[in-house]
Length: 136
Image (tube, rainbow, N blue to C red; front, side):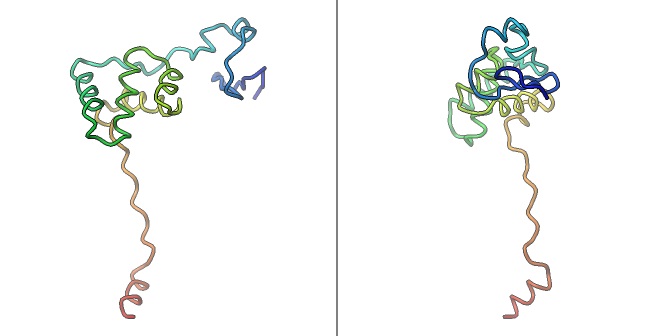
């Protein structure tokens, strides 16, 4: 791992050490496209039906906040905004934006909008302990 200026180079991904805009020196050294976010692997291209569905979710406000936020992320991504621009607009992390795009491209709109199922917690008491408490 090399630290160059304000950026940490990890494999081919460049992550800022501090959240300060990049300098013109770095732009000249690496080129603007490398710093600006490189090419996205998972590009959002909505069908008209998917766009209407997302617009209905954000305009009605009857859904969970997490679903509305994901619909906003997908709509902004479809408009061609970068992950950084979307995260700043919606006050969320770039990683959340990236994960939402990846889930949409891999599994479709409905899966990308819904929460992942959480595993059920292990029982705190086994059968013997539960029987003992009931007997008290």
